[in-house]
Length: 280
Image (cartoon, rainbow, N blue to C red; front, side):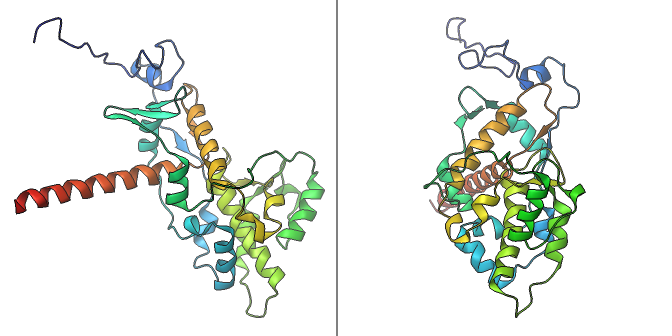
């Protein structure tokens, strides 16, 4: 191969036609030796949900009605922090995609719908509720969840997940009313939504701003939860590319499920190809 046909490949993490070498990206800082402990910590607080399994049949009916059975039917998955960190280093905020040696890949609305069964049509899940005081949140918890948390358990529109765990410890009796069943459903959903889909940097608190959407369980499944999850995931990945980022939150579990499914599919095709070659 002569010098003119030889392709020069930069050994670093950046691609000049996509991201400038001067862009503050954690991959460049790692390559330059400016970050020592580079592993990101995935923040989630959904452990309360998986401890209280199996879900009572009456509660499961309403969870299916809301469209969250795809997530609720999964077992607790331990996220590989190193895998997520490596993928973040390949994430480009400019294109919202992973730039891998074999090409670009990204998670789409279809993936959110197929892998988790989330609705991607309908009204958007938007807004931020800053109008409620701590007392108002307590009253709302009493109405929608069936218990009133202590004042110390509410912090700026966030509820300690221990309160939800204690509520789920109380079994739903066979003669329990439909309102009691719906309150337990909202408790499960709040752990799923606040602990996995829209988790924040706190390890023990879930946001309460989704209460208004969970009031009527018959309409919960009409919202475009899939698009909200995808937008939150993109933002979380973009934030995690910062050289000073130490944690990553949001629906990062979807990244783990996506690449695990992709790996399984590639392994299946490889096995099938080997079998065909043997037969030939």
